[in-house]
Length: 189
Image (cartoon, rainbow, N blue to C red; front, side, top):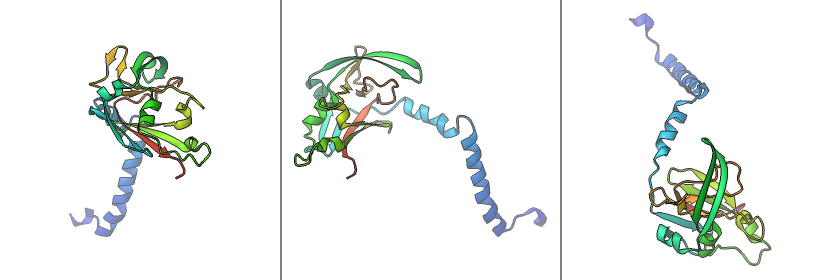
């Protein structure tokens, strides 16, 4: 029926409006489609057998679980709140500081406290990322004993991937599962 068909110019005007309203309505719904699919996709992240240490370091490392176990091991009892509620775990693994030092951070000795300008980006196999600062883990400043844990509650994490710990954090957001990379970044560079 010719009377009910839209002209091309009307379609060009109405289509963007329709798409905008559709996107807006999806954003306003509780638990949008994107939110509903994200947990399922990240519930079973791909397991990687190595952790890459890179960024502003003298030499890039590719560490296996065996390599991580070769570092001095530390045990940590931690409590934090997660989306599931309060959690208590015992982790064992090397200090993040020791792992990074083995890659020879590229701090400039000619600049006073150059290390204070560095951050550490931790990335998981599902794309989740978290950040710690170098002074936060440096024993001369914050001294947080973050681990790249190889076991949780006595269970090896070989099939799940190493886990970053952030002792002292009241929430578990920086306890990164299935760590695949540790990148040293100079801030403001």
